[in-house]
Image (cartoon, rainbow, N blue to C red; front, top):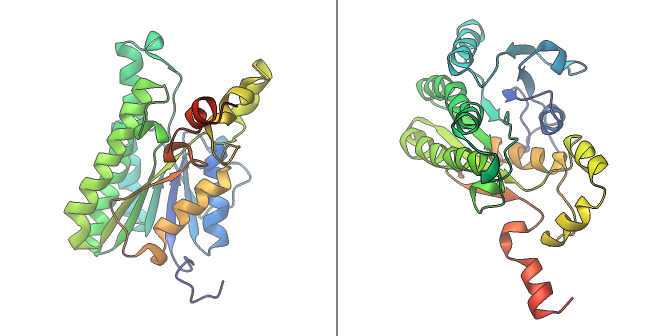
Length: 259
């Protein structure tokens, strides 16, 4: 693309959280390829090894106070970034039988409360400046139930929060959107497939494209929403899910086509 392309981010600085993870590293690469200077955030510097970042911001997003303090310090030292991709998240409780008060609280802490502590000072600074873009990496779990009850509730909370930013801060030039991935083929799946090689046989029939999405596909959606190519888009949710939420392929195959 040319330097004048609205899909480019030349001269822009973008903060990406969870930058050391499978999706995070693809986000860093995609934004850098589009010309952005990337600030990477994660829990430890070791998680950000081999990433060419303009700087690091280290905090545990499960700790809201520490998260807010780290972001406030970065804004004070460097000014607010042009865009932020709130990507850090975590889940381990896959059904209600694994959820109790402690699990619920821990999943809310990192996936929703921490995301608020991260983005609230950034949004305020962006509004004061008069421009900025926020993208939350949520999940299809926010749109329909696919398990992970506490995680799903937290990720649905991000959708409501993004819409609040879009409505209340739009007049100050701040856009907020959500990317909702389905199953993403990250290294985290390697362990699951090693434990159960047949898992994909159970997962893939639910996806109309017949595959999981890649981290790059998630990153490209976030890049689009942060760019001027999406300048008229705010308060939206973009599923990147190989068609999972478009309808029920398994029902069509089992009931209508008799596969």
